[in-house]
Image 1 (spheres, rainbow, N blue to C red):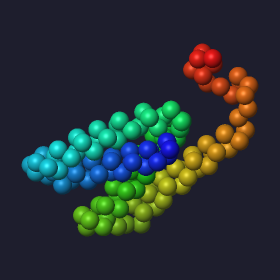
Image 2 (spheres, rainbow, N blue to C red):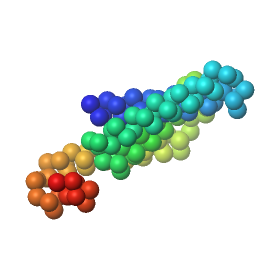
Image 3 (cartoon, rainbow, N blue to C red):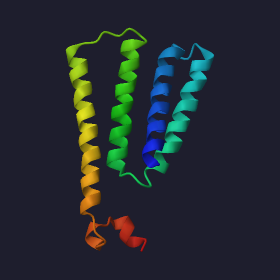
Image 4 (cartoon, one colour):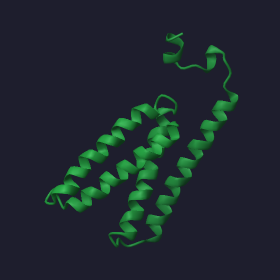
Length: 126
């Protein structure tokens, strides 16, 4: 469920960023309002995701996939120029997000019940 909420947070963040472009420096009312609404939704969902997904993974996925979605909107909707460098950089971001996701799965497999695998916060709440 946390990954679903993270997906919604990402889409909300990307929509807010796209609305920044559409607002034309706050000269268009509804896109300007949507900036705050979309970012409000995104920043409300992120702390909920952090209950189950590590901060490092959550933020990397949120910012990385948000960058991808926003870039695609720039290319497809706003007619921004697609260059090899842009595509390669986005590819590196996607690779990094995938590596973090796979690494998280490896941690779950290797985690036991010992206090050695617990964070300081987890140990103090036992």
